[in-house]
Length: 202
Image 1 (cartoon, rainbow, N blue to C red):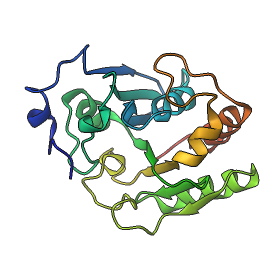
Image 2 (image 1 turned 90 degrees about the vertical axis):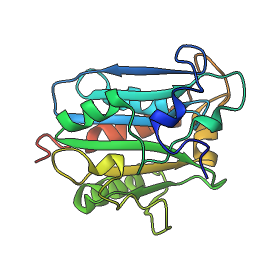
Image 3 (image 1 turned 30 degrees about the vertical axis):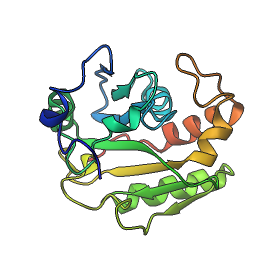
Image 4 (image 1 turned 30 degrees about the horizontal axis):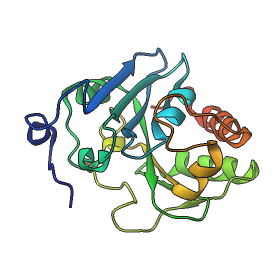
């Protein structure tokens, strides 16, 4: 269980700028790339979301910056309600969230209520040689209407759970606190995901 059930519970106990920071920018596509557990919470996810968003899509990252113990900052996607994140989600036509799961085998688990775009992502990742499957695990499927990925205007987005094993292969040192050195696999994944972003989500 997460120590904090929602952001209002976390805020009195954790200091912005010391324990966590929020990164964001607004794009013009109507698509929002989110990493609600970035930084030390689920390492590498913020880097991936940022790179996929580039200058075209909106980007949001809740980033744990504690020296250790960042997992305490994890708020599950069904209850994540940080105010800026909620404002950006409400303005987005389509939302993609990136998470990090603990699997040691390299894989991207694809969930969310937008099955059509999810299936395209699975297909394109597999074509690029990156293992990807539809997620059937309870708690990781991203099907709840309250899940972050499903709170945009379309009410159906995509949730990507990128395994620990795959993230380790994408960075020279996954736990580097500042700039992580990226491998060619990082750029392959980012290029593939960027090519899957719909031009007109609605």
